[in-house]
Amino acid sequence: MNLLLLDTHDFIAEDQVLLRGRRLQHLHDVHQASVGDLLRVGQIDGLMGSGQLLELSADQARLQVQLDQPPPAKLPLTLLLAMPRPKMFRRILQHCASLGVAEIILINSYRVEKSFWQTPFLQPDSIRENLLLGLEQARDTRLPSVRIEKRFKPFVEDHLPALSNEVLSLLAHPGSATACPRDVQRPTLLAIGPEGGWIPYEVDKLQAAGLQPVHLGERILRVETAVTALIGRLF
Image 1: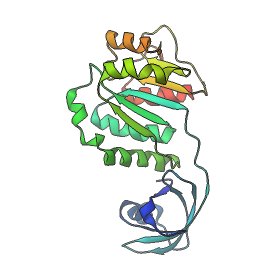
Image 2 (image 1 turned 90 degrees about the horizontal axis):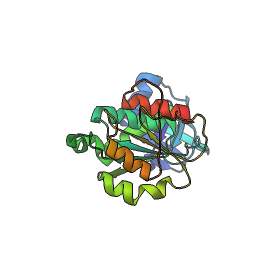
Image 3 (image 1 turned 120 degrees about the horizontal axis):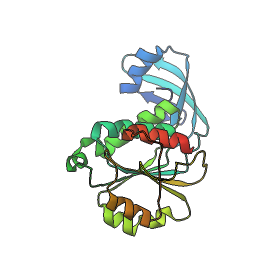
Image 4 (image 1 turned 90 degrees about the vertical axis):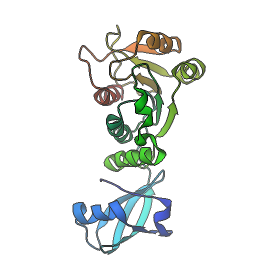
């Protein structure tokens, strides 16, 4: 935890917070904090700054905070992601938050098992928890937006063309003729398929919506590896 993230309900005054639970335990076990210590803090979807530890016990920590620094800029990236395996999904959410992805759209695909959509990790509280873990790692405060689209064809035909218009729109697909570009630094839409890849029908539909197929080379990567590799290459 490289940043203590503060929620609205943590504030007991304009410049003071009370922490309990996981963050308190982290102060004891990892930071081995003492009264008087200065810690990096940030308000969720707000500013970052410092917090001085005024009180520390087994039950709570009280900090005086000063929030005066903007968080790092988000990447200009919308990630269109076929719903991954649940255990992988948690890690991907954390990676995306750490890397600064602005928006994640989860979509169905032929090779996405129906059971994946039943995972409790898709509950809003679970999604938020994993995004916060990623923000804590990267010292960021702004949560990515997460949108769920379970119907492939209606979304791709009715909504995707507007999203892909006037942005760099890429479809990650092994065997494509074009290599993924590097260091684009412009608004980008990136579609990444499930384990096993997009089926030809889906590739055709995504191309018709304005996405250009690209590859990362001859190696076939797991989804969570491909996500980080592609984002790193693009930005």
